[in-house]
Image (tube, rainbow, N blue to C red; front, side, top):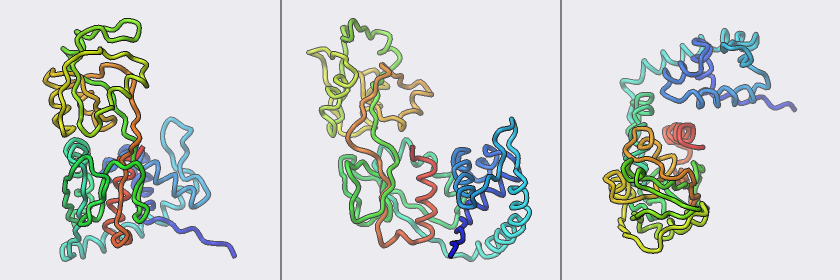
Length: 295
């Protein structure tokens, strides 16, 4: 017996928007997701159908003949579904999701982009809680959590987002006075240490084959936000998480001191409690997080 493909409604919606504009970027802007997320959904839909829907070989994105036929068939149905959803949305009961995120990830990376999801799904209330950066436990009162784990909890559903990578960074003035010779730092090099990762600098030096000064001032802090703020003020060099810290690199509040990175033995995971895994709202948020934050 030949099994029929299970088509994703979200994928079909995304396809119709991309087909209308013949642009993944413009579709992403309307859907409040990235162009790469649009491309990923379209690719998944093509794999489900076993055929190409867009011609990607030309300079401009064009529908294939199959893609045009699918659009003609599906778009009227999607518009009807949207109309039905709009009819009942005002009276819909809001669902609520509690997600626990480590403070640094929440304030600098997750919350600034959460507006994209809330704009798409105003019927879903999101409660973001922050908790200890050093804890590897999924909080019992959370539906979802984004945390650093060596291995995610075996009794919960999880998605790998990206490994923790640490890059040396400091103020622009700090970099100006930095001097090295034969893979050895010979200038004054005060360092800022996150107390959760006390050996990170030694491990970075080993991975980068760089010799740190034997003596030097060490500032120890217990939060990553404080570590970065100290680096911005020129107190010393800090190991900044990548890609979380890319915003600072782009705006120039801190700069990379070396291109070498240290890949830690922990990774950011999205974890979901089993009793909420089948909830439609939770699934929507999980999908959005994976599409927008996973490597």
